[in-house]
Length: 125
Image (cartoon, rainbow, N blue to C red; front, side, top):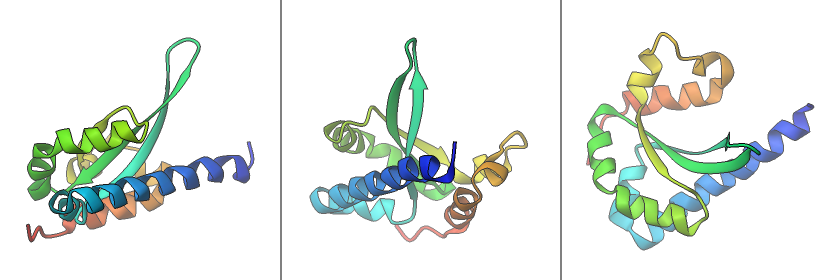
């Protein structure tokens, strides 16, 4: 597998995540404000036999924001479903960063840096 094979799906995931955020901001501006302090990512996984490609939204939040974002999960799921994504999952960025078994820093340094920002950001909402 070369760099082109890896980067094209990642670019497509980044575009899809930005489009998800754009749609939420457009139709649900108050919910969109909540996402401003979070990191939104499309996550692709393969499940079943034969393996099916499934995509869902991962929303990485600070301690302060996670309950507010989870309270809007139905709206977020509706947008995700309309975009062909199967689910919305909210994750605590700080908890993931502190997990001793986490390989995020080694496997995805960019995500690790984004999660540092999210975990340390002060909530103004």
